[in-house]
Image 1 (tube, rainbow, N blue to C red):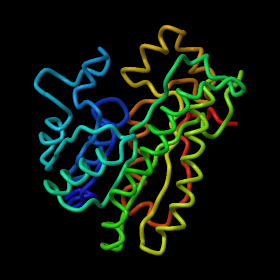
Image 2 (cartoon, helix red, strand yellow):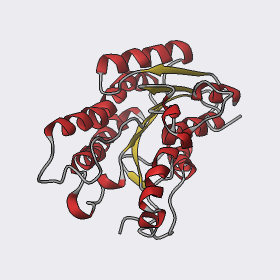
Image 3 (spheres, one colour):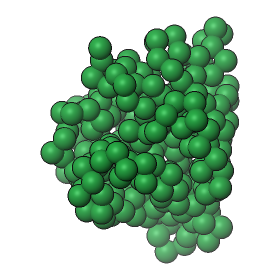
Image 4 (cartoon, rainbow, N blue to C red):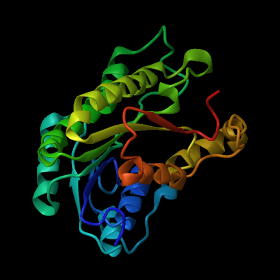
Length: 266
């Protein structure tokens, strides 16, 4: 029996990277896991994200761990698609007990979108993907959790949503991640009376297969030397925090943000 045996978890943006690590962690803890991604085979786009020839998608990896699993494709920024995806998962796995609203991402060059020069079209994209996508996902599970009288919701912000980066670059993305922080705090107040906890995780420089390619181009030390621990984080570092936030170890923790940055914040 695992800590989450008998529970149903959904992780958005779980076809690769951190979302995949979260889904695998929850499955290892015994939860049946539904995953949502705009492309369940997006791992194919990055050499470092390869999941193995024996697997078609992360769903196959999850099933190998002895739990039920189901995958649905949806654009997280489209409410109707999100609702349909969650409906399909509920049909196959049951009502959702745990949500990790991980899907999101930026757009445009990392040196662009200075705070005084934000491109409206790129702002709209990240606003819909990050903030609206999180809200759509929460709306899809909140009623069921209220009915059950319990639930765990984890949103995903970023170190950029907590601390301004030098130069003021990529501020459109950072603004949406900061908005998720406040949304999380308000949601915790809203859902607390229903015994539903809501917290956020804020990753820093994490060495996923995709990001490792960027880190190597710029020089890994450029990023790792900024941290107190002098290393990049791993997906497992973040998944361990997800374990805490989705099990009974965090039953009296809500409305907070846990940064997983290796001491990047100061």
